[in-house]
Image (cartoon, rainbow, N blue to C red; front, side, top):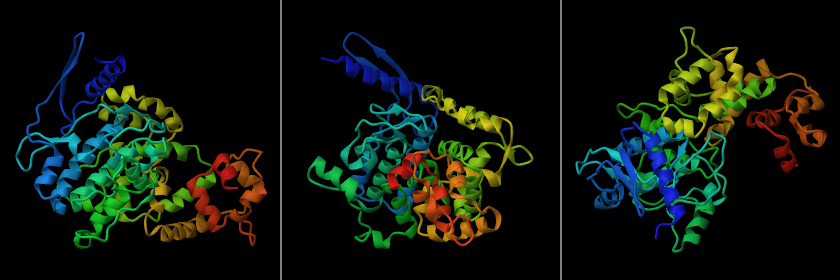
Amino acid sequence: MTTAIAVEDVRKEVKILRALTGHSNLIQFYDAYEDHENVYIVMELCEGGELLDRILSRGGKYTEDDAKTVMIQILNVVAFCHLQGVVHRDLKPENFLFTTKEENSLLKAIDFGLSDFVKPDERLNDIVGSAYYVAPEVLHRAYGTEADVWSIGVIAYILLCGSRPFWARTESGIFRAVVKAEPTYEEQPWPTLSSEAKDFVKRLLNKDPRKRMTAAQAICHPWIKNTNDVKVPMDILIFKLMKAYMRSSPLRKAALRALSKTLTVDELFYLKEQFAHLEPNKNGTISLDNIKAALKKNATDAMNESRIYDFLASLNALQYRRMDFDEFCAAALSVYQLEALDRWEQHARCAYDHFEKEGNRTIMIDELASELGLSPSIPVHAVLHDWIRHTDGKLSFLGFVKLLHGVSSRSLARAH
C-alpha cells in the first residue's frame, strides 16, 4: 500500500525535477502521471549504466585525467542545483548514469527523491543520505548545500584510489568515522598521485563546512581549472558573503580589504570569474541591478521555490551605490576557506601589515564593542582586552584575525 507520506515525497521529487531544467548533466524530466495506486515519472532513458559500475569495471580506480572528466560533470551539475537553491542530499556513484555505453558518454545526475529546496542561510536538520557519503554536519543536524560537496569529495577519493575514505562494519561505526576519523593519503596509490589531486580531495573533505570549497570553487581549483573548456558557474556563496560584508562595521570592512590584497593569482581566479558573471559596466563596477540580472539569466523555476530572490533584500545598500572589483574581492572572499590553507598564517600576517598602514587606528574597548554591535550583557573588557595593543591602543594581530572572522555577542559569550 502506498502511504500518503510516500506520495507526498514523490510529488516533491516531481516538483524539483520539473523546476530544475536545462542542464546537460541533469536527467531530463518529461512528465508525471498519477492514478489511484501509483505515480508514474517519465524521464530520459540512460543506457550507459551507473558510475559505480564503471568504477568497478576499471578495477576500482580511474587515472587522474579520467577522474577529472567525471568530476567536472558532477561539479557542474551540483553547482547548478545549488545556485537554484536545491540540495541533492544523496550524491553517490549509483546516482549518476551514463547516457550511452561509450567511454566518453555524458554523465547525468538522477534520483532527487531526498532533495530539498534551501535558502543560502537556511539549515536543514533531518538525517538523510547514504552512510558512506553523508557529511559530518548532517549527523549534527545542521547543514546546507555544503553537505553535497562532502559527498563529491567521497566520490573523488573513491575514483582516485579505489577505496572509501571512511569505513566500518556497521552504520553507526561509519558515522563515527565520518565525524572523528581522517582519511588516509599515505597508502597506494596516493604517493604516486599529484599534489593538486590530493589537495583537491582534502579541500572537499574538510569537516568544517565553512572551510570546504563550494562546487563552483572546486571547478576553479588548479587540479581542475587547467582542463580544456572548463566554464566556471555562478556561485550562490558570493551573495551570502556579500550580505555579511554589507552588515559589517567599517573596521571589519577595512580588515577584509587588507586581506583581499594578499590573494594569489589562483585565489583571484574564482573571484574574477564570479565578478564577470555579474556583468560589470564599462567602468568595471556592479550594483544591485547587475546581481538581479545575473540571477535572472541563470534562473530556473527552482530559484523561485527556494526563494533565493528574497535573500537579495539584504544587499539593498547596493541599490544606491556601486561596487568595484577591489571591494568585491573584500566582500566575496571567505575568511574560513582561506584559513583552511597551509599559507593562512602568511596571508593573515601580510594582511595585518596592509591594515597597519591603511586601516588600523587607536580604538577604545567600549568603542570597539559598540562597533561590533555587542550586547550590553557581554563583559567587554574581559572579552576584548587582548584585541587591543597596550602600547598604542590600536588593534592587535589577534584582534585583527578575530575581526576578520566576524563576531557576534553569542560567539563571544560562548568563548568567554
